[in-house]
Length: 138
Image (cartoon, rainbow, N blue to C red):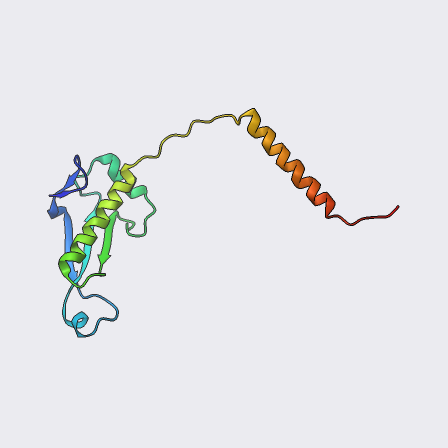
């Protein structure tokens, strides 16, 4: 079981983890060891609650394909185990990001004092700009 939080968990058989060769510089080690990890997670076929599935599919994240598959590639560490943990952590963060719903904003009226301050600032700025104008002798 892979735990997202105390209430939500994903069975590990729903997450496909595959070892691949990492890209980039790294000498001989990078050419012969499959230390990078490719994680695939199908949102539609998962056991996540329907509300979270819908939010994940609506999310405009580049890691989520058009058919609802999360693809994460982790290759920053030298060991496959560390890259596996990093990929799972990124999946956890992705799911947690849609679980957190922003607090609704209550519309409020600006206070009388704040309106007055704004008008005073506008007057000050206007006077300053007036002083910068060209002086015309009459």
